[in-house]
Image 1 (cartoon, helix red, strand yellow):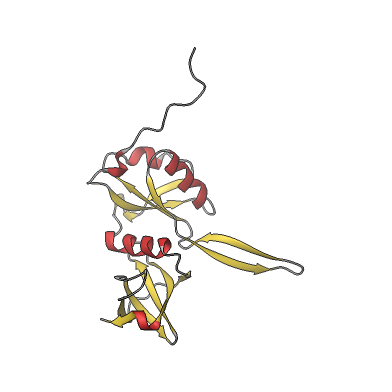
Image 2 (image 1 turned 60 degrees about the vertical axis):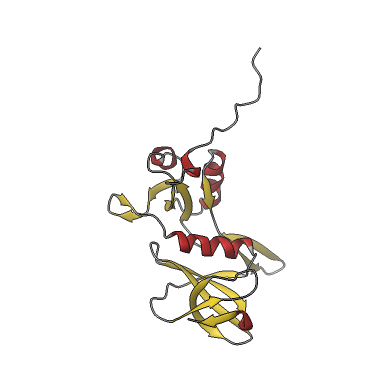
Length: 179
């Protein structure tokens, strides 16, 4: 008699040395579901979220929303694209025409570091110009981004060039040095 438990999810190519991070364009408002399905398939995903507070007439509510609406980051190898693309909700791999382009590893690492440090983040418009800064102390040490405001806290923009999207991270002013 066979066991009722499903077989364990087999490890896919996402752990390969050749695997790179790609941005997946997904159906609107399905980012969390797509990330869960890809995680269940064994792929490494990154879906950075921020908390938005909304006040209704008689109550308040918090929502965890994606920092990059319509996108999920996934680490895949060159031969593992089809299972990712056939996942419900995935529209395409972001790239130039039919050629998918990998997201810069340093940009993904910076966002992942900010998420793990539980830094306060909000979506931010993509900036092409501005002074760059580096966090030199604290849990975000080593991050580089564009500094937009310097007061008691520094607001630094972390960008994903491929998507032309950015997010805003607030860091103590004494932790950041201009480059």
